[in-house]
Image (cartoon, rainbow, N blue to C red; front, side, top):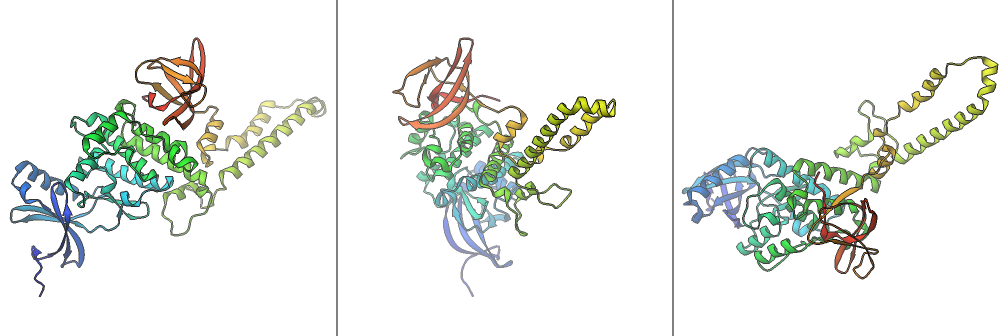
Length: 443
């Protein structure tokens, strides 16, 4: 008979894996259900502190609600020699930290899963582990499990937490949705590049970098493999001023999905059939809901629409020249009824059913959306003819002014540059300015 210790006569403790801030984590085995599990046993020196103990017990009860698939499932809880514990599913896989970098599509898929888990915790008032690449384990394609890493030393934990802490939390303020959005933006940058934008030997060094250094555009690191829409997403997540960030998780999820689907369209993945076993919800793009007939790719649909339009224009032009002869031959014609018959086929067309890139949709809508930025910092903003500080200064813009972001970012002189347009009663200024002085306008 095995002499290994058992908890409640059921859970056989096999190995100590490490420790989190509050619990010691063991690999164990559930003899009743024949499956490996994780034992989270509150650290002995903390069990005597009533406030921390009550929070540990409360957190385990809340996590047992299983509000999202990214959160480990809690199987059991109790006490061992007056030390509370809880049992969770056994999780295997590599952390995001060791798996990165990912492709832009992979990064957006994983970050969407992560934000959905954060949002589920927020809506259910359930505490979640810290947002860190060490705390997410890739368990399958597109899916992660959220743990509190038990392999980091106490000093590494402090540096790890500081790497994602929003500027406004430097004095120990509680986390808000907007500070969590900042952490998610930093995590997305790390998933794309394989490195963190802020680093240091101490938490204080990391905090100082967050307060003083701008996150460089991902496009300056990855080049054309990363589209500018992803850069814009990260910039809107990590603005130093929380008022200029994406305001909450719901908005963040919407923007992530829009960006992800744009990349899928650009890569051509949405113009190919899905396999019978594919459960990706991208399949909804192929079907109408009332029929199982697959729709043609957007460019073929667009070509069909354009050819039809040209044919109608040609017929209309011929009719315009022939109109006097027709009237003399057949007599008066109800022109209103004729126009209605011509318009009918076009009224049945719905451009919402075409899977098109956003810029093409904007053309059909009659306007092109331009991102508005606001000049921040101190003093006038210099606008240059080229993205370099050695080029000619062609104008200056006062702090607080709104400008249109029309190109970039580009990297020069160790900084990121954006091409902007500023319109005033004195005229229009169009040129390049440093990105660190420009923030996203509040919605």
